[in-house]
Length: 313
Length: 89
Image (tube, rainbow over all chains, first blue to last red):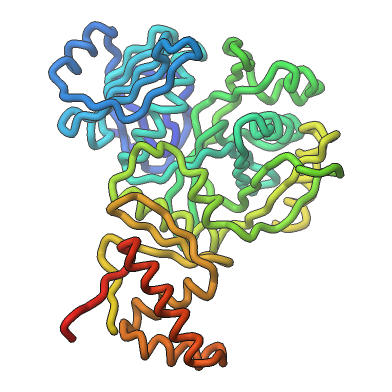
């Protein structure tokens, strides 16, 4: 079997039936996941004999179920989201049976936000809730609480010449006393107003739109290789008036561990790996805090990050 | 008194703090630099008297104060099952 056959995301090579959003042209050897597409009914039959325990759930505001993740020690994991699809992932992460009713942004969003991060974690990677962009040859991770402007800042950087690396999740592994990150699938999510504020031709660098919900979902060009993680930028809103400010960090451990992804996966080996990866990041990656000024838009924030990269890396 | 750090406890030192992870509970605990150094020495030396001596060497603090602080720190760690007190030695 050709070790480079099959498109990739988050450090995995997907073989078999095709999934949306994968990155082609990745030549490095990666662990593979075989994919078979099936109907919801077939997956229901396969999972029907499972002794699944719900380990993560999210509901709509009116109480209807939106997302369920179940675990069965023998069969693995079932990931279901309303109108987004159902996936059965083997316990070792090597196989995924997928029912993707919407091959557009909905199907891809569930894959990108849950299925692929779970599968790569089962292959021994650590996942961090962060966007990733490559600025002047340096991979920069952007970490922020929801609504702070992580995606809009990343999109501004991409429109200004940076390369898209990941929208929301970085797959990480320790490598050569540093941390290597694997690129995410081709999906970027940005608020319509933030997208509209990006002038052409930079907006075109974000790729064609796949659809729209509360955000516009875009398909940027995929990044074709893993990269050493050079910096993590922790974005937050300034509590007091003033311009956007770049500063060093002093509470690194808590910040890193606080942004680990898939908190429902908590066997001891995973928790130990999280701590180890956080420790290596603290030693090998430049870590800064960027406090966004009250009057500053994502364009200003992106320029401050570009300036910092030019000076510090 | 002698203490050990059980297998279900791992820790890593960061720039300004040490993060201790209890694998049995999945709970993280943050320690400041001084407490992190104490934990490191408890793992390395075990005996509280030896740890006290090393900290006094490194910091120049008053030995009786270091001993008191270390004992209180160990009581707190033992309560959280982050160290075990070795009895009968």
